[in-house]
Length: 276
Ligand SMILES: NC(=O)c1ccc[n+]([C@@H]2O[C@H](COP(=O)([O-])OP(=O)(O)OC[C@H]3O[C@@H](n4cnc5c(N)ncnc54)[C@H](OP(=O)(O)O)[C@@H]3O)[C@@H](O)[C@H]2O)c1
Image 1: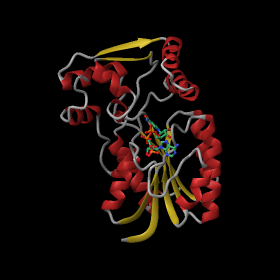
Image 2: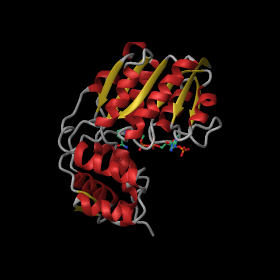
Image 3: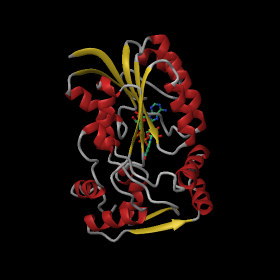
């Protein structure tokens, strides 16, 4: 067992769980952190942070719900300040590509004097199978605000491999690793691929952003999450991210996984089967 304690904040989340299990398989001394972990960590309760981070040298940090939210800048500043006080040496922060708010949080870490990495990712493929889009796909109709641009969706397994490399390889220290999948895809074509692989008829419908947000709020979606949906669909998906990067291959020495690989793997598990 290597002695340096590596913490994973958000250790039951889409990337956190995978990063934690890779580090454990490699023999690192790990500490998974979330609201329900042995050392409870809650972004909404700063009193929980100190005990959770004591003795930690390296941390993989996923902010929840999203680094684009205005509150994230304040929370990341407080997290970085406490980390310095407690003697943390290196933080790897998961960030979102093209998110103005996320860049404010990134800059706090970059200018902190700590060793740092930013893993700045495009939209996750796993949003279709482990997140908000899953229910609609299972029900046979996914409704989203009209996306203005195509997106280079990335496989969370690739984010995990890059994050673990950033945590463990000294040659990658103090770099922004901007990572995407290998191809630009429309949401409509993603849904089509999922429907074909699952041998189902799944409709993809678009709504105006105003109609979408009104319906979301009527269903009880909180104000900050409605703000986030607007930020993601109106600003982040405005075409600024309509390009791919080669960073996954540069870091890992192999190409990024494509959407077809993801869809075939997940369809075989039955994740998109009709909800009964
Ligand atoms: N989804 C994307 O396409 C995408 C793209 C680029 C970047 N990102 C970034 O990725 C980050 C994670 O987003 P995600 O959607 O993938 O979520 P996720 O990692 O799946 O988030 C869930 C994790 O957060 C923990 N959590 C929830 N509320 C918490 C709280 N109040 N305090 C501490 N931990 C809490 C959960 O554990 P418990 O419930 O046990 O607390 C769980 O471990 C965000 O900062 C986002 O900006 C996402």
